[in-house]
Image 1 (cartoon, rainbow, N blue to C red):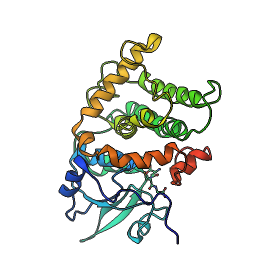
Image 2: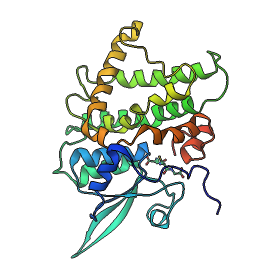
Image 3: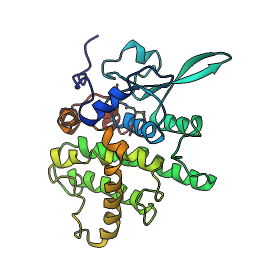
Length: 282
Ligand SMILES: N[C@@H](CCC(=O)N[C@@H](CS)C(=O)NCC(=O)O)C(=O)O
């Protein structure tokens, strides 16, 4: 089999994430098969760190799928986890995948680990899930349509439209935030924050690669949207300052070639292809 066109990613985490990987390289019943660069992985990694759940970090290249990954997840996507399962007196493990499913699993399987990442009240919990889903079904596809956009700058059809649609989704999400925050539901970090954080801290890709840049107005320049962008900035500052977020990040120079392939729309990952075909996320 010829090698995947996206397989040339740097083989391991760098910077702060490298230290964290080293701290979690020893054998543990719960294992996460991860790619250091992957925002879906980072969602789960953030939850493990927030909740201080013991885990073993196993780096795999999902564009060069090793048998160890395919045996657990036939689609060969990261994150994939191996969950400890007690079968009588023996301990075995069973696989799980899909970042949001894994997040829910961790919340239920480790009830004594705080912070709780969903509200205790059923209505509020359901409501939080709506905004978790909004990130996956609206914000991320719009992020990738904007990032992978090729073509003109026509305000009605071009890059400007892709940018506006992305920013409108961010604003709609931000409008639902707790008024003081700083996090989505208030003082505590919860799932809506964790599912968006990996993309929020990668917003520099638009200034780096797209003509006209990201386009979120600078402080005081948001016009009628100033209040909502101000709330967004407060949220983003809280997320960027969070230990779990800082410690799961690698050095920017290693993300650059990966995101350049998306910005040039030549990436062949399932995510890139799903964006091109209008399917959203893989
Ligand atoms: N829906 C999945 C998406 C995971 C995903 O797309 N991961 C990427 C890396 S960021 C991957 O494994 N790509 C391999 C491929 O495209 O073949 C989730 O939420 O976990």
